Length: 547
Image (cartoon, rainbow, N blue to C red; front, top):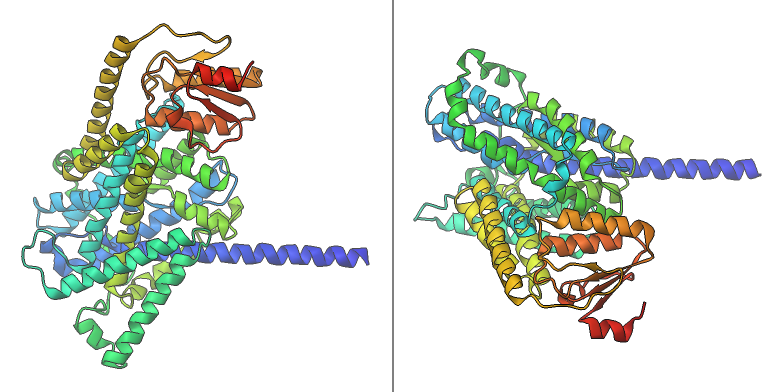
């Protein structure tokens, strides 16, 4: 009897594992399908002189996206040290820079193979630099310092990435923001795109624990669209294509011949590479910004440790592979969180995820011609809203009590990164932070007073900012190994920047050590921790606690 019960339990466990595997693979496939028909097919886009070759360019773009994503998925999932299945893909935020390189080269040649070949070479070089930089940061143990980029500059850069997604959406519906005359149809289309994206964003926030909410919502929107089309024009969907509510029936197909016909090793020219060095280095820099944020966010959301240094190695190996497909790739935090929630809790599930993506080679471009442009355009808007919400609204709620200057720097960084360039924006954010530090330092020298010293306290009588944060955290780590409690005296600290505040809160949450923080209470009073006690001043400390 016991053997039968044990066998039933084994069968039930097997059924649960198979169901979880099917669920997570289906979700991962839907994510890849959405990205491929929204971003993937538009990688080589934006050049009017080559519009007659749009089907070839769409096919080549699709191959770049799918090949790099399959390689990335297999390699990242195999080498990651994260104890879970993860999703990796072509970096969709790099599409904008891919197009800039293609457009820049196309202004200097009318030959399509020359333009395509040199664009792929430039992006391959950038991807190689991305891999090498990741390796260098790992070997020199400098990767940890990327985590100390001021959060105001970093979040400003993310906000700019979010804003750039709207450009992708505008291209999808044929909207030119510089065009003074905007047709009524474009206004209606744009309004529908924004409405679909806002509702989708609301649902994703409202039902954040449900990984299928966005795929199901998308299918629902497509069904509603076809129902309305059925009522208005009947079963002849060619009328919807004629009116622009559906894409023209694509004759594009996944053909390796398209790549072969547009690759010409003889046309490779250092002239085009030198002309695009700025975009090459900028793309490398932009790609580096994602990992420190992705690992920290993944750990916070799942409780699974994602070590930044270990994932630098994974990123390095992954991009050494995908540079041959001319595409930078990365570990996708948001999709990986949903992948785990839907059942992808093992590394094997992540490795197997590369297999169903192969289906898109056959059917991806055909599926695209049946998806309304308003739905395709809504995805970049959705992702743009998500980035902007996190960068601007969520941070405003966090910073309004203690970091108004940080928020101003964030907004300024985003504006400069959007209007001038990403690297220039981040550089401006760093400069603004140094100016704030200098001002705070001068004020602290002027206002410095003799303070009471508490035995065994960590006295922070200096400005705590991104420049000295690493040393401060090392001190805290050493004390946490030998003490049951730590007293940190901030009464003589004139200023704590946003990154330092969040890093200390994260450090406190990692241990069972009791922390007593005196001074700068406004920075820590919202921190939800059972091992953190804050005090306004010495009198408050002596009243509530006695060592």
